[in-house]
Image 1 (tube, rainbow over the protein chains, first blue to last red):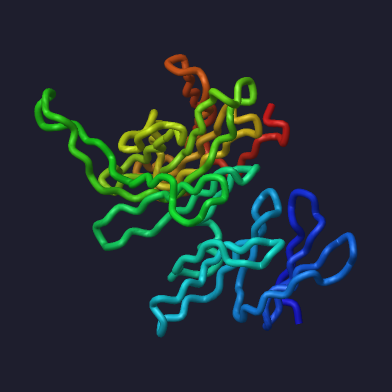
Image 2 (image 1 turned 30 degrees about the horizontal axis):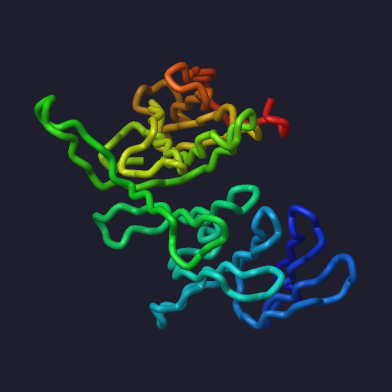
Length: 181
Length: 98
């Protein structure tokens, strides 16, 4: 029995159907299953905006702390290109990833490593998930006691983020703004 | 949002910059316990909806809300326009972003 199903959002040429056994990728052109990935217990699945990847999340296994339950998979090959541990509910895990419409940028909100540590945003570029191209920590400048003192940085926490499209008038020189709050 | 702040701040970083130690600019939200940022489809402007869940002013049981229009591109001429101060249930851009 299918648990959930999604169409690829851009071209709509593929659907991913999740059941107890795993993910069935179906071509909308041939009406045939083109790929099956055995992966039990998937709770949520979402396509990337240009159809090239699916993000899946399953319930975190407390008995296996190394469990990487949040995965980014190539939607045509079925290979896992990135995987992370996500200890909170699976649906919240999906909100920690954000893509540029052309998938040239993928952002991930990473939980803090300890109680008083800041969280941070990882920036992946050009679908290279081997390591983040940049990391933006929630550390914010505060003015020193005296005006001439350099600012001190205090740990904080980002609650959310949004990626701004490039300026359409001049995309090559446009800043690529990330809003984080 | 910084844990030291009672009011929210939206930090805006340029992903094309070399360093991310500091944000490019910041947007202060006076009712900032909960913040939603909605960028329009062209990337020209954003709506920033902020709200306090508990109102200390006694004006509203539902807390205080604020909606700012922020023109994103424009450097020092960047505009922050408070467009609405009453209670807000939802807001959206039209799909064209206009």
